[in-house]
Amino acid sequence: MGRALLVTSGSETGIGAQLEAASWIVEQVSAGEAETRPSQDVIDLVVCPLHLGGGTDGAALLSRLRRIHPHASALLTAETLAAGESQHLSDTAGEVPLIRVPATPELLAIAVSAAS
Image (cartoon, rainbow, N blue to C red; front, side, top):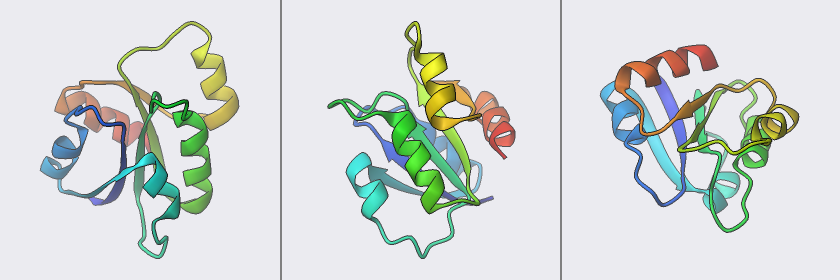
């Protein structure tokens, strides 16, 4: 498939294992590491949780990562979506698919396809 950059929030959602099972090469990084890692690797997919904890805005982080990896597809994940967050997502990250986690492998495949 390609190389995926998976930003982790500390809670295991199974996304990394599902991507690897679908033949993705997955690099898991923390939110802090995501922006400071060397950018010479070609990244085909960036997956970022909406809720990172500690006041970190996942949609804003994903927007910055898309500037670092402009050719990568992007996908946001969330366990829940609070009232008003959908407008914030649209304003901050643009048209990015959002998938509820945990997700089935089939739903993740659909979301990754929609992200492309």
